[in-house]
Image (cartoon, rainbow, N blue to C red; front, side):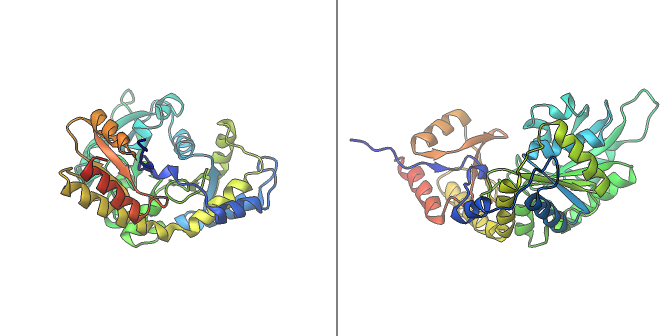
Length: 340
């Protein structure tokens, strides 16, 4: 009898599951109706997240997509043009909500300043000069750190500051999609707040690599968060006893330093893949993109080996996370080498 190998799940760091410590925190969380009043555990999470992100206030939301949609909906007027980098989550992974629901007209910035980011000159050229009333009005810049489609690439504080300077000089509002901002902060060995300087709003996620089952935050000014709370309700995100979920997010915040282990595993995986003839990026964080002649064929072959992956930017994406150990990385490379 032939036994299938135990699956190794590299599809995303969203597959991480809450462990017993996190489940215990969820079970014992103090709760209240977070629509009629403010659930105390949700309130504690929002206060802590705002402090960590260096923002005046924060709002818990069920997902990163909702967080980004709230930001774009409040920042954009119908028909406004906004700029985002090629492959940005707000452009390719949120089902057109930036246009359909937020009413924005997206325009793409190439990664000429490094993986996942434009150069200041390219940004300035894309913004251009105000034209007559019948031309598009550019009002928003969306950045992403880390940049998923660029292989988890980070934007360091100095380059972030240069882009912010250009955007602000032109009068643009800036939203930072920081779904994996924790990963960037750990990789750069800086506080998360060092990566949000100057932005008007930032989103961050607790379910990517940290074990929390649900939850993101959107942070900004107190006035913005007041409006965002109404928008969250409009979008169906006004959960009741949300403290059960917020408790998991608080535990996740405690575990941010542990992300360094997944970064080390990603480097080892990339090194091993190259040894087996698979060209890859040199990962900044926990995402490895491998070049293959035919993505669907490669995905099917990997799946037959019990290595679960997915496509990204025309490549095969491997994502390391807390539920994959260093031993699992070596096992995946062994299967690649032997074909079994």
